[in-house]
Structure formats: structure tokens, C-alpha cells
Image 1 (tube, rainbow, N blue to C red):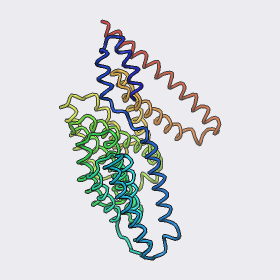
Image 2: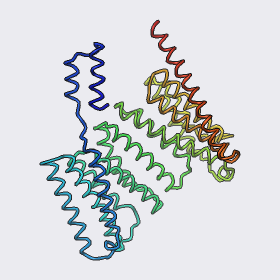
Image 3: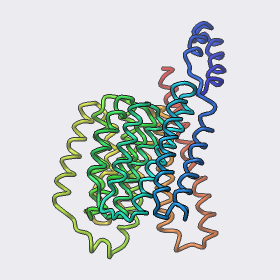
Image 4: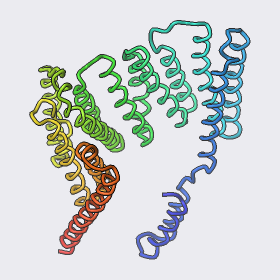
Length: 402
């Protein structure tokens, strides 16, 4: 809620006697107004950074000559110095933007120099250095934009390692865990924790593909993120880690439902006993944690982590598990009046419906009829969900009046 909206709502609270006029003034005084230039600065950094990257990738820059190296080094040093001066003497945000530009030019320039002097790479070590420099810059300036860019570089480095060398960089993972985990935990910021969790999920996908693991090992890896969230004492971290874990495994379930329809895929799949042992221990530990924390209702989340591929009629059971999770979250969200659960439950239900509809309707129906029926179906679902929501809300109100 921005300050203007808060002021409007605050006047209503004062009129209703919830707070006094003096309390509203104190709340507004302590409320930090966001810098209106923030979005402008972010886009300025993006556009200027793209300008530098385009220049570095130009034909002029690809010619091996010391002048190119000198220009890049001069740009890096100049941007860092200008950014530091602005940060300390004029504007923190503006200064950080130039520091980030220097950071972008540093990484891109390093890759360019390696390219023009034909240095053969066997791993993603340039991204490792780039990531470490990002951590050092964040340690010096402690601005969230630097953290975000550094984390993006780290994630991109891991993806690059998987795509270019078909390998997983354990060193990048160590930097990610040892360096970024510290700041994510101590700051307990929504942006940091969401980006960290997303990066973890993407890196686990790279780990599975690069090492040619069976695809279902992702179930355990995503469950690990869920369990980590359960163990963390800070509510922000717990919520974000578990939400990203559930989102990851839900998308995995959608993807899996298409794979398991192909007979050749099932025949070539190697079902490993070791996975069942590891998965069983992980599920048992999660159930125990839920019981100890009296979160039995959240056990419904585990339906997404079932190894469907080991069961007969696996693709049908996979679709059923998506619907069970979606409907359960919708009902729990309405009952507890938890808007986040309702939103996520609604989105997951729509995605489940879309998945089923694509699998069974795309080839069998006329394309115009396909979209028309899909729209009518979604309208019907929305009416049904609204009816259920009103029934639950009315029953809650009735219980409260009693």
C-alpha cells in the first residue's frame, strides 16, 4: 500500500474509532515514501547496460587490439569511481546505478577479452568471478539492486554452464549458497527470498539435466526447498521458499503429464530404487515436521510430490493430483480467508484445467470450437468457485455471530 492509499484508509480508521488522529500522523511519519525516480533509474540502467553490451559485441570490439582492452578498463574504472562519488555525496540510488553499469561492463568486457584472444573455456569460471565481484559490491554498498543483478548473473552462469558445457558448476553453487544465503537470511526480504528460491529451482533443473539424472529426481530436489522453508524460523523465508517450491513442482507436474502419455518415454525410463528410498525418507521427515508444528492441513501440499511415474495410469493420476492440490488450496484459502492461498489455488486450478483441456481437446476439436468451449468452461468454473466462496464466507459469518 502506498502512502496516499494508506492516508485515505487511515482517515476511515479514525472515523470508525480504530485509531486516533495522532496515531495516524505517527504512522504516516514513519512510512517511507518510495523514490519516484526508482523505476526511471532501473530502466536507465537496463537501456544503458544494453547499449554497452551492444557496443562490446560490435564488429569494432571483436578485433584483437590493446586499445579495445584499454577502453573497456577505462569504462569500468570510470563508472565505478563516478558511482562511488555519487553514492557518497549526492544520490544513493543514482550512485548505485553507475556501480551496476560498471559491474555489467566488467563481466561483459571479461567475456569479450576472452573471446577476442581466443581463450578456450572448459567451464563457466568467468561467471564465477563475475558472481563473486557482485557479492563484494553488495557487501560494500548493500543496495538491493546490486544484489538482484549479482544473483541474476549467478543464475545465468549456472544455466550457461549447463547449456554450453553440459555440466553443473558446483563452484557457482557454493558461491550461491555460502554468499547469497547469508544476505537472504539476515535481511529476510521478499524480493531477495523469492529470487533466491527461483534461482535454486532453476539450478536444480540444470543439475538434473547436466548430470543426466532421471527427470523424477527433481521431485526430491524441489521437496528439499520446501523442507528448508519449513525449518526456517522467519515467516517471510518460510512462505516464499515453500511457494516457489510448490510452483516449481506444479509446473513439473504439468510437464510430466505430457511426458507420461508417450509410451516410448515410459519404456525408456529407468525407475531407480535409490530414488524411492531417498524420497520416502524426505516425505517421512516432512510429515513429522508438519505434525510437530501442528500444520496437518498443509500435508495436502505433499500430493504434488508423489512419484506418479512409478504407478499405473500415471498421467491420469498426475492430472488428478494437480486438481486435488488446487481445490484443497481454494477451500483452505476461503476458510481461513487467506487471499494468497485463494489466488494461488485459483491460478493452479486454471492451469490444471488448461493442461487437461490441451491434452484431450486440442487434437479432437475444431480450433475455433476449442477456444469457444474453453472460454465457456472457464466461465462455468468461475461461477462455481464464486458460489463456493460465498457459501464458505456466509458459514464463517454465521459461526462468528453465534
